[in-house]
Image (cartoon, rainbow, N blue to C red; front, side):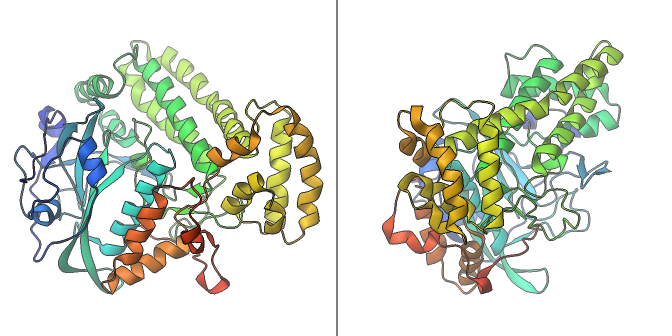
Length: 472
């Protein structure tokens, strides 16, 4: 069957100052690594057996209806404002409206240079492409709002990083690629017309019921508060929470130096470029508030009374930590079997986390083991768990089915860092079996899968991944 993507492109109809039209740069020998049939079906894409799939998703052949463009945005990167960023190695092919009625972008990553490449080659190498494919699809299976992966293609061309590495292109799907940084660039330029156009477009696409910029800001604050609390409940560390990686849709975007914790430590930092821990595990709750303050600043010019807006928006941002704490407590309460948390449960949760840190307990395995009575095995000093468990068991007395709740809240499988690295190393040598196995197992993260017990194991000392790297 011939490939058919039902494009209906709206971002391409915005003024030309929002993007640069740009065709992908062809590659020499595209070959398909993976195509997400289930996602394609949800998007109404037909023709999964078309032999041109590799060519299309490498950028060598444009499907009918595609209007490739690189989007413009700015952003705070590690706290420093960059007045112009933009898609330096990505192109929006267009949009589709899925079977659920939701409009989504289809974007190529690694498809060649754009006007925003800033002397970069616009390419991606195979490792980050496969990492994003696996982790974004795992996050979706875990129930986290996220961009998704539609396809991964080898290009047949090397890219130069620390040395020559195999090139690849990822096809990413998102409810949109509108970021805090998209608003920031027009606010910084004092382009009131473009800012209003972007605001109107964002409302129509993501939140048509919002009543003015303040209402939109409040909704994005709620979405992002819930998202970051969910990340933390899974031990996920984004690694690069710049404002250009913070979406208005509330989806997780950019899986560069991301990672999941093994042993619990709130100070965990994985990103190789995060020398001061700005985007570490525990810092994420503070950083998302900072990011929302930047969005609020960018929205102020849209308000009829800017001075009053400053006061109103400041109050909204200052209230955000309470939203995050409430979301965090609800999720962690569920992780220990409590369906209706009380204020005092925060102490019970914090006590467990403190004991986990002191005993080197694995984050994911400890919480999963609470339901089957084996959590004490995760502690170097099991007595430390036993002492906590007395209070915990007393608290669970009124819960109707805490084991079932814990199994729904605590995955058995996450994309462990050492398994991702092993998968990438195998793929570089031409062996994609570990990649496909990870995708299969991680598609059912809450199910017991005895045949995949090796993927639950924390890393041995010589397997520990201490740093992750940006895909560029």
